[in-house]
Image 1: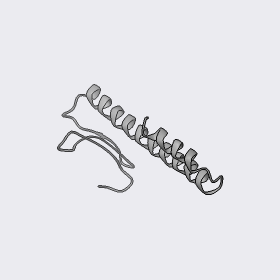
Image 2 (image 1 turned 90 degrees about the vertical axis):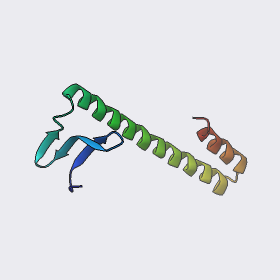
Image 3 (image 1 turned 120 degrees about the horizontal axis):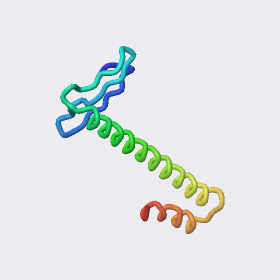
Image 4 (image 1 turned 90 degrees about the horizontal axis):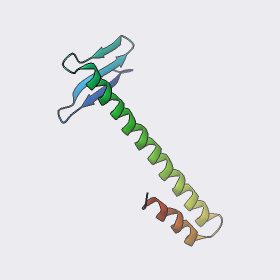
Length: 87
C-alpha cells in the first residue's frame, strides 16, 4: 500500500474501487461510477459507525471505572456496562 494514499477496496477479492493520493484520484474503469460511489459511501458509513461505536464503548467503560474506583458504586458500574450489551 502506498503511503499517504486512501484505498477503497470492496468484495471478497479486495478489488480496488477508488484511490485518493497526492497524485490524484483513480477510479476503477471496470466499475460504473454510480456503483463505485455507492460502494465508497457504504464503506465510509461502516467505518464511521465502527469508530463511533468504539468511542461509545470506551467512554462507557471509563464511566463504569469511575463509578467503581471513585464513587465506590460497583453495582452502578455494572448497570453502565450492561447498557452496552443491549445496544
